[in-house]
Length: 243
Image: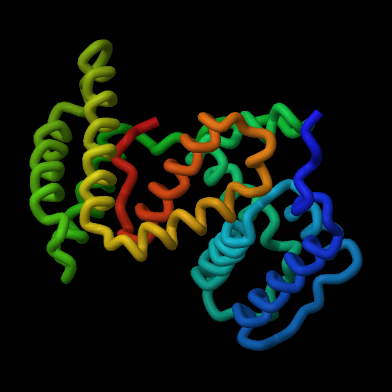
């Protein structure tokens, strides 16, 4: 039987995790400190025990604050408890994107949630084209040739996407996957070695709570997917694949 991951079991690690989030929440609340204690402390320790990477918890907090700001001027500081749904949503998205969803569900009573769809195919293509066009207008010219080729192809596909069915639709979805791989490969080629090394270390840290429960092949696949996600975030690349 595999020994439990010490990072998941160590109470001191959970406390440090809580204090990191407490400090981050304080900064998001413009310096207003709300202690993570009592039930809130147990709630956040639960995130740590589940292996939710600190960066994913922070991203969930950011997502909550984005909605909060959109409602108008803030009236009171945000408590960590309010952010849980967003933290869990971000974690679910992350673990599916890097391939650890099955590892979590096999070793816990947690049920895998339904995959979030990307809306209609035509709407998805519209969003991707808009994102890629914005990237073409930026200062970084390293991906121009790849972006131009992908935008032209997606623009041609968009015209008939609403009525496409059957084998033709499956072929288009397969092509979208290929274009997504092409975009990430171009971004990797344009990335300097120091940045790739930073992504490698960050990916190892994010996956560390799950590594002992993964086969070497599964870990390597998830690690590459995790690096791809970090690269996608860094370059603000859209996901061309459609679910």
